[in-house]
Image 1 (spheres, rainbow, N blue to C red):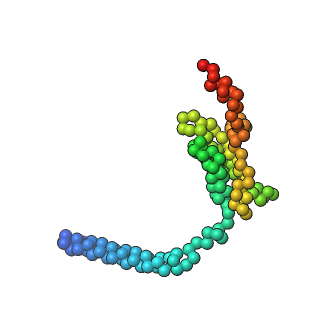
Image 2 (image 1 turned 30 degrees about the vertical axis):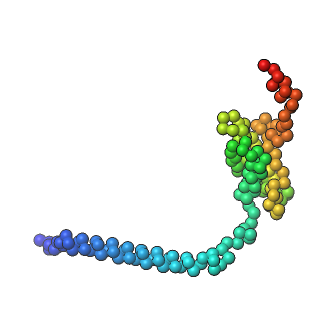
Length: 157
């Protein structure tokens, strides 16, 4: 007949679980405090935090500049933009980024889709070329109001 293992009382089991939880919580607290002190030693006040001026200009920066240019050209008429990542690229021969954005211009009820093209100079960090075309290939920036047609439309009932 196998030996009987003595049963522990409920009080003993409860105390053992409580002690284990206390030890885990204490160790976790100590590690957290130690970790906070370790990270405090490397604070930005004591060191030159991040060398942002040494981070190279990249495709994300070119896209951001193109989006800012589109916002400055169209203002509140620019509903949204998204990047055409398949066509956006660095052109090594020209040493520029070609950024293509798909945009919506107008308002939320009446708008049209547009293709926005930018060349961005990575050295000067400026947009050197910006054009916007509708889906039929007509320029959106060179459209002007035909005053005669507008006046004719206003005068006719």
